[in-house]
Length: 420
Ligand SMILES: Cc1cc2nc3c(=O)[nH]c(=O)nc-3n(C[C@H](O)[C@H](O)[C@H](O)COP(=O)(O)OP(=O)(O)OC[C@H]3O[C@@H](n4cnc5c(N)ncnc54)[C@H](O)[C@@H]3O)c2cc1C
Ligand SMILES: NC(=O)c1ccc[n+]([C@@H]2O[C@H](COP(=O)([O-])OP(=O)(O)OC[C@H]3O[C@@H](n4cnc5c(N)ncnc54)[C@H](OP(=O)(O)O)[C@@H]3O)[C@@H](O)[C@H]2O)c1
Image (tube, rainbow, N blue to C red; front, side, top):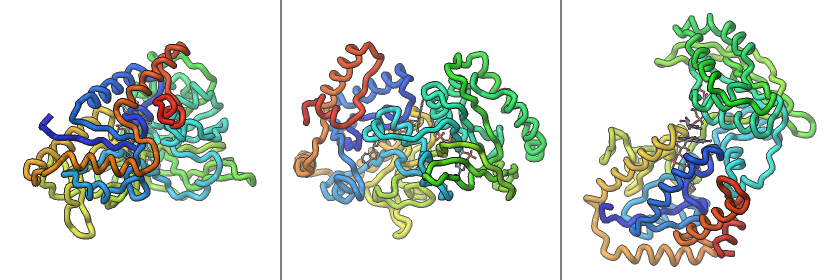
């Protein structure tokens, strides 16, 4: 354990982040495995846990508060909590959502678990990544809506989703529409040296192992379409999505979408952005291009990557502050990638600690932190509380005969831990 005392400060009551509240809820085995890993880590005596505690400029404690307490280093792994809106007219209509909020809703993250979302019958999903497929999964197999359209600004060779995830909904895919899209796109793809048959093969190869459909939802991919305007009715509800047609061009070493100026309207009543997330601007670290700024010439690089936060206005590193996971690179990679990035971030911190001044009285930092937390006037969750919650949820799952059970509100969780 390198003889380092670690204090984990977490916004949510329970640990896990997107492993708990992002990954689709029916992946019981995967989620259970990840929960066990979190439990193992929390079982280490040199690690303290304080949950239900938001850090940031508008949080319970700010980064300067933590620095003032005297921690030798701060490793920021708060994920990518900011929302990437495109600034289109109509984004504030009822029926326009960002995938993250819906994912939090169906995975029961308080307060999203109990929030109302107006999902209609014909839904446009912007983007073609695995998050789009997770939302399609929910719409097609749980809500059983009439139509789901994945609106893709580039072509079939740029889809980001994986075969494994497509299997869940592929048997709802409109194959005639896929074929006509491929015919339409072939000459455009040819012009940039692509073969749409490769993408078509990839999609169709998932059919034999595709899950048996449970709804008649029509699902299709609408390529070379970039959203420009969300249309609404007099009551403020979505009643259409205007998209601009695009074509493919080679620029800056990649295939990009170029807008053509012609537009068309998709007949939808719900629009969900599945275009990735950005870091939280109110966290209190410098941001450029939607990302926390990293030291361009890191002193403690790991695998040639920088984990050190940098102030671009003052042209110097922010002393003692490191960043890892989706906070270092938003919406990038699977949970194993984020875990490895966290380990690498911790490695950078360990390197830094080799030359950091020794702490005279480490225990006093924890005492002062706890004194500050006691003044917050809200329940702060510690390791024994998590144990009680896990037991209460396991008992509830057994009672209801479910593979897993999760409380949807903080109030219920606090009651189960005897903290209300
Ligand atoms: C919808 C969705 C589905 C996914 N499904 C899969 C999948 O099936 N398989 C797979 O391998 N990967 C999946 N991923 C990717 C995986 O979830 C991520 O790679 C991983 O969770 C990122 O980890 P992280 O720790 O960097 O961030 P997060 O998981 O977002 O964790 C951030 C943590 O920081 C805390 N936090 C946030 N803000 C604050 C604050 N201000 N103060 C204090 N604490 C804060 C949160 O409570 C949370 O505990 C999915 C991602 C999404 C979005
Ligand atoms: N089950 C799983 O394993 C699972 C589930 C969910 C998420 N994840 C992982 O989590 C990470 C994030 O997933 P993600 O789906 O959010 O991101 P992603 O894979 O990067 O996909 C984002 C999609 O949004 C599009 N997009 C981005 N900006 C856009 C804009 N301004 N206008 C129109 N379209 C835009 C992208 O198109 P361009 O390509 O043209 O930019 C792309 O199709 C990925 O690594 C993913 O694999 C895994």
